[in-house]
Amino acid sequence: MKFSFSSSFTKLTILVLLALLLVTIGGRLVTTAEATEACVGWPLCQPEGILGWGQLLHRASVGFASILMLYLLFKAWSDMRDHRILLPLSTMTVILFFAQSFVGAMEVTRGFPLYLSVMHTLTAVALWGSLLGLVLASGYLASEAVALPPFNWRQRGRDFLTLTKPIVVLLLLVTTYAGMVVGGKAWPSFSLTFWVMLGGYFAAGGSSALNQYIDRDLDKNMQRTAKRPLAAERMTPAEGFAFGLALSVISFYIYAGFVNLLAAFLSLAGIIYYVILYSVWLKKATVQNIVIGGGAGAIPPLVGWAAVTGSLNIPSLFLFAIVFMWTPPHFWALAIVRKKDYARAGVPMMPVIRGEKETRRQILVYTLELVALTLLMSVFKFAGTIYLISAIILGIWLIHTAWQVWRQEGNQIAWKMYRYSSMYLAFIFLALMIDAVI
Image (cartoon, rainbow, N blue to C red; front, side, top):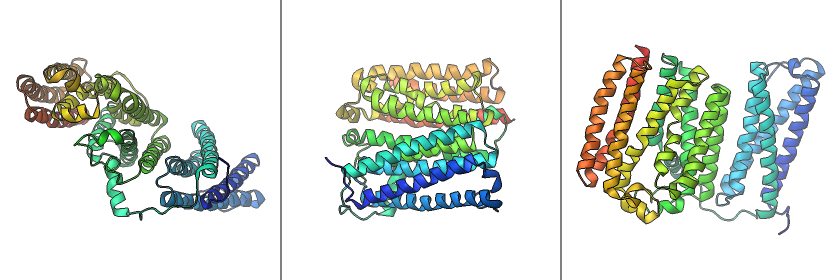
């Protein structure tokens, strides 16, 4: 296998490489000459002297490189949609380029704080690594574009939305927002709420897309998941992988730029937990997959708390623990309903490995522990009377449903438990929010 310049896509990547080299050299000269102050403002400015014009010229080179990057993204998604290396690498290169520009703009407007300077350097390193990898990969792997079906924007839009699992993400955003309200003991500002919710949607949606990329063959064997975009082959694996990576990386920069670093790293930890620890390893390795993997879904309220306070404490960990303890009975109820699906796919869910009787018992045990945990928040004075009354009423409701699951066989009551537990989590966090602001 030899490196070849024959592909038009390879030539484009080399052109992008040269443009980025020009931007990097210009940026270094501007920094060394301390020309930033001679051209204040973003993206345009009123240059002062030769240094100011040098800074403006550097920004013009960034604009030219931006156009090339967007064209690279267009060509990758037009001609390389079925290439599992070139499409993700192209997408990541473009995102990292604009992320570096974004961090650079944030540096200028915020007076060059240390953490943004470090982010700017690390993003530049990642960008160069991604672009060099893309140039090499395209030279060895790319050929002239092959005929692909036309890009159906409407269908792709629906499929991309499906990849993010919007209904699941909505529940995660409820717990995130609750963390903001409870942590700040007030309704957060609109601007902070917007960025936290947007970053949260991208993080959870990106994780979901990556999960479906990993499980695409497994999903084909399950009735519940067989119609997902990747399982049904309405989009290529490369598209799902690139889309999931893109959303995940963008979410980190949204949090780091508009919220704070702690929230950004917590969100990133949730992505890694769900994609690597759960999807790649735990899901197919142990009957305790849901128990251990529940930590991924429990991180969003911590993100919300950190977004408002910039720190974590014992009460915030209670929010994490509530979601963590809620996860097993919720998903085991679904596993009872979909037992044949999981067995056919080879996923060691508890009803498959230990039987429905033991699963129903475990649902009741975990529900009792969950309700007891929610009441401890009032015992330790982390919540007030409104929450306590709500937790008691909701707890009795959920325990009664779990008791029915234990006493009765069949999918109908298990499905009821699955739906009721979703409502329970939303209501218990709503009670926490109301209690915090009254």
